Length: 351
Ligand code: A2P
Image (spheres, rainbow, N blue to C red):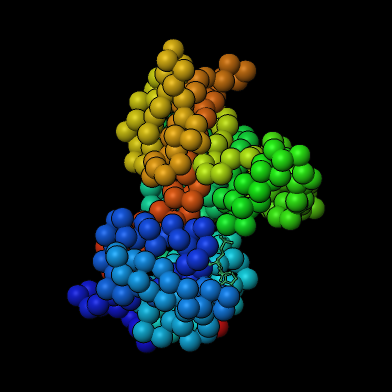
């Protein structure tokens, strides 16, 4: 059992350390000076032996196995749903608390789904695995939470413009290679997405479900219900665009009480994790190139929806790899430490 006690050296593993999000997790732990005394980078057998650097030290990547978590107190997972499904229960069995970035455990009743700015107290319910929400849901809810508190949101209509980095390292490479191929008058090679992504938009993220929505769209609906309010009606259209880093969202909300655009701007300006970047007269609005590499959720184009009584439109942009994934996971880990929740109440809860 590796249950951690305050004051003891803290051992932290990152599963998927060689991936787009895993690498950002390591960077974020380093940048925020997370009090880890030892870092254990884990990936597939393909990467075993590779070297990563953490705080100036070189550390060898190890193959992720069922026994990787012996002596590890806290693990951040971003190695895909199947890997989380298989290995997170073994981590918990070893007494290791897991923050999982995949969608595997998000809707599991045993696992809190947490955005620190939205529902931090749900962490108290954890039984070993805490789920990190979907990237598009995170940035949307960081912006919606203060508006919901102020005026009670009844309905949300959202369309996303999502960067390829959300799919992982191989998609970043695919966009880059397709641009190069097209400029060289070659046929673009299509491997990751169903169609060419360079100079194109794909109105499909993840697989289609029976109701005609994609799984990504339903994640936004279901995760909003789990974290913010089950009574909010949500409908989403998620689109992959040829952007490397930074998801954008066009969000329309209908509220119970009236909020003017200025009131919404003032509320969002005070909200944790949000930066209002909104001045049409100066052509000031957030774009992915501004958000990439930043921690905040940027909001602009705030205006009243003139087609209904109590409605607002706005545009919301965030770095999907940071706040949408790695940063949110590290913030959860920080809260777990602060609240003394790096512990597993029942090692067999997920086996
Ligand atoms: P590897 O680099 O060895 O394949 P991305 O989301 O950028 O594609 O990264 C996925 C991450 O998950 C990588 O670090 C990858 O390791 C890791 N990974 C994928 N499959 C497995 C697996 N079966 N076991 C352990 N790690 C895995």
